[in-house]
Length: 456
Ligand SMILES: C[S@@+](CC[C@H](N)C(=O)[O-])C[C@H]1O[C@@H](n2cnc3c(N)ncnc32)[C@H](O)[C@@H]1O
Figure 1: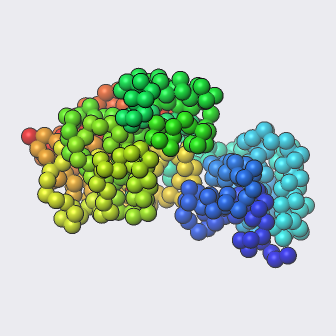
Figure 2: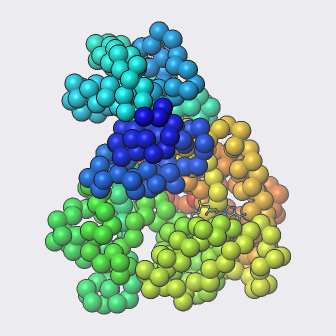
Figure 3: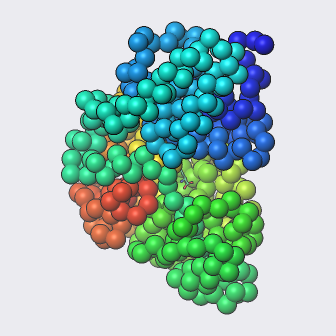
């Protein structure tokens, strides 16, 4: 048997698959969203959910687990044994954060060491995990607060600076599994067939349909079409999903298009400047509120997902999908001003950590300044494309002020014909120049909205 590291070795073993996925992610980059499907594809179907749970749990708690493991071992493992370090973390994750039977966790972890080709480490894995069980009550005592809540120090500091009162709630929610939320569709056929009305009527009707299929859900207040499921289900189980009766979309994302609909008249010409994977483009197209819609993104692969979604919703003809850099409109703009622009800007993703816990492992403090600069460049480049009297909604799934209210304050200071509208508290916490939704404080993901209008 070869030593650990070979991709084929033990890849059908759930623990090993999770260990390899996280090790590959932290050493080689990418994202869990991209790596996980490859890891799951080689596992028996019955093991996939367990492996996914392991990967998310490891990503969520790695920072804490690494510190706990260091306390439990006399000396650190050698770099070539990083797989063992992850295997120990996985055992610790189960012992500290799940109700898995401890004896089974220890036995399986010990066996997995041998499967990795590191039978010599069986005693070590056994000793570390058994000690963790004995000392469970004191394992995190005295660790830095950031480590205890499994956040990188830089992010914890920024959250403490930006949201001192909400810090504990933010960190706690970031370590929880996000609920599955649907946007109930407005596809004409589906609406007519079911006798559903617009917005809330359609939502009530679909909720009843879900209940008939044994899927419990609750409407989310302050939104017209959001239904939160009491338990996530595969989309294939959602009645009429393939025909566009519902889409998976967090409520905070839904509120972006709801806000634009409230801000601009029917028939407005819309540019969705950073559109992929297309959740908001689809919502806009489905609403029937807008006239021409142009959906732009500079990532051709992600744009494919926009097309697929529009296809599913039967709205392909409602949107012109283009691959281009939104920051250089001279190369793609037809010269007709837009009445509405959605700039759902690339950002730190710090509002969606519970959905993408790998953000805590992959993002660096040094990434923030370049992101802020890229957002500013997009704002400046797109502003002249807005018709006088038009509205640009600047949105991010970030909770960092640098990307949100500070960004907009700087934009307003250098853009004399821009005004920020005051936004309703139903959107989130009302802040200078916009509204901030905070996960754990408001329903849904962390999100920022600024509604900027151009002087007529
Ligand atoms: C936050 S995501 C957008 C999510 C999307 N609005 C949705 O609701 O599904 C940001 C997107 O911006 C795109 N992007 C980043 N820089 C860009 C640029 N200069 N021009 C166009 N798109 C860009 C990324 O490829 C990414 O798909």
